[in-house]
Amino acid sequence: RPLSSNSGADAGAAGLRVLSPEDNLAHLCLHLSVSHGLRGLMWFCDINETLMRLKPDMDLFVRIAGEFRSEKAVFASLFYVRRVYGSRWAGRALAAFGGFRLGALERKTCEAAFNGNENAAAFLPFLLAPAGAAKRASLVFRSVFARREKSRARSLARSAGSAVRAASALKEILLSG
Image (cartoon, rainbow, N blue to C red; front, side, top):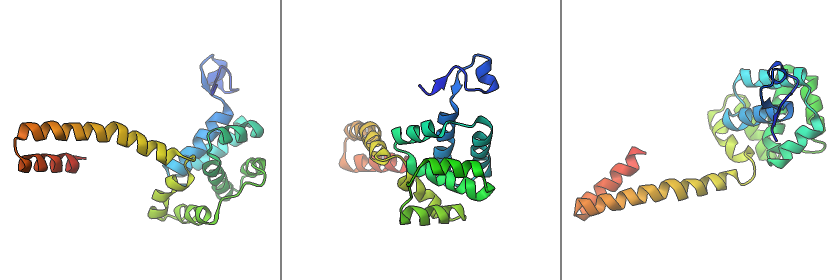
């Protein structure tokens, strides 16, 4: 569904499959807030240009943000794009979210990250990522990586032949990352 045969961009006119303006905007907003902690002028510029040049359908855009439970991240990005550029386009996009607002902790953390606080920027993914994303990532990590590491540790312990060698092998695995 996200790929349309013609998004109105030159690439779409050439028959290439590209993200629709609405999906592209959602991607840019998520990437700015969750991956880059509201830092990086290029991302602000890309969002503003996407709003101005591609003129995404705001109702569809808000629906897409809702489908992916990413309203917080998208809203935060648009808020700061409006602040950086004084962009009426970002203002219109924010208005499309109706009465949606960020909570106090989210607002304060976004503001600190925007102002250069590295700790706040590192914390943004946990606050703004789509609901349940951290839990899903944790489950995937534990079920995929932890099992493999435990299995490796067990096989090393068997081949080591002693508890001391097994403990040092486990320590080596844990320290190697």
